Image (cartoon, rainbow, N blue to C red; front, side, top):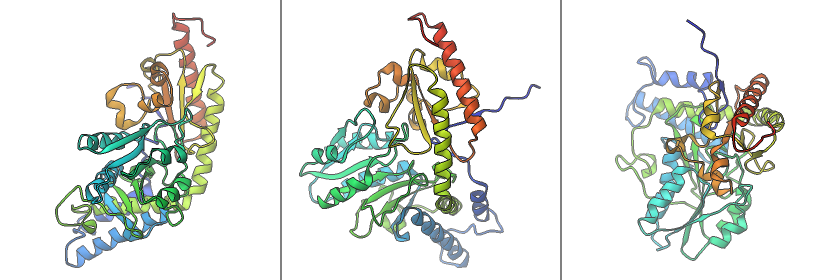
Length: 393
């Protein structure tokens, strides 16, 4: 039987493999001879499981400069975003019912806001500049007396654009507006210190950071207190904000992943940024390509490029040996051009003919060079077949 060729994986923004050290931390909570008890049970095995949950809570908090008691466990960033946005609106007793967000937010934020619009909540969807930046001034201009919440991503999941959260947060605090930040793509990639940056709510995910899928957290500031209505009711777990039996093994894995990320943050960011820049330098030998998002305000692990003169589906089909995305994995079912890139002013054709390369700990320079060669070869080939015009291929 012929050997199946290896696929070069450059889709770390979609998900990452579980680090072996993370898996090792999880195993004791999955085995009969281990600490498998319910962390809410009132007996010695339950107390041991609870201790593991609280140790993981402290590990997650440490990466973002929070207190352990400000970390609420969830199933992932999608649930965290829903809890933050819906929970803030539903708890509010002031009558304020307006949200400011951006057109380029993750689908789960956009769809949550769209849902709340059907319930009478006003939402302002800001259009970013062509480089993907939503300026603090733009946010402040959108505020109204009814604005309760601003929700912005720290790092965009498709373009890697970094918003100036540190400058915006104190401005919103001065105005009494809650600030929610989706940090699924930022945690472990950029330094985050919530002791210095007054964000009220911050969403986190384990599987973007070499932890298990199905585990996440929402940071909920205690001073001043951000108050939320629960979205899941039951036994009153997680300070009444999120009921349900805790998945001890997944939370132990998330804690281990976040502790590892804290130790490796600076080195990982430098290494991955170097490989991303290497990839860009090689691909830019092609004419008529466009880097999406501000290259000066970009997370180290993401590179998004549009290729003129090719059809997007054909380009992706021509690269079976390369695992990359055309946008967010959470939006791939629609098979439509990226709404994020269209919000940045890209045409439907260019948005569709885009590839998101996202790099991680396992990426090597040899893989980057091979991937660049593969893409350049296929783009030139597809352009040579185009009847529309003579391409410099």
